Length: 121
Image (cartoon, rainbow, N blue to C red; front, side):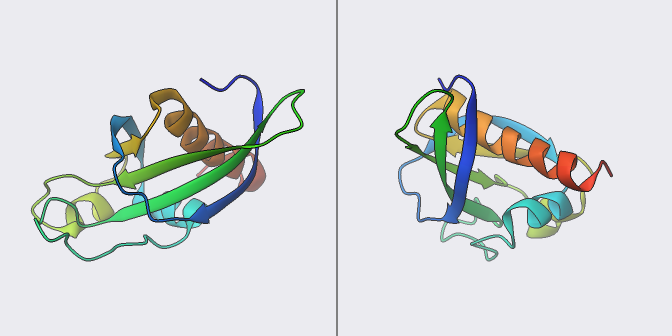
């Protein structure tokens, strides 16, 4: 679990092997503003995911010189179509990662930073 930390950078990165660590509730448009367009916007081979972001956060904990890498995914799950997640206000997105608190903390912090910078909707 991260303590006080700052996000140094966020990049797209293939994220194989993540598993569900929690959820965030947010509009699709906000996620696009914060993270850019989804990295995958076509149905997965098994049709379980229609929209997905794969993210690599570079973070630095307060008082530390070294940085850490946190991998996180944001995705819809088992919806009829991509439009469900993309048009539902405050949709409950799935968050995947390798460490529950780190993935959720990084995504939540990046969204909060965006709101602080650009104001609330």
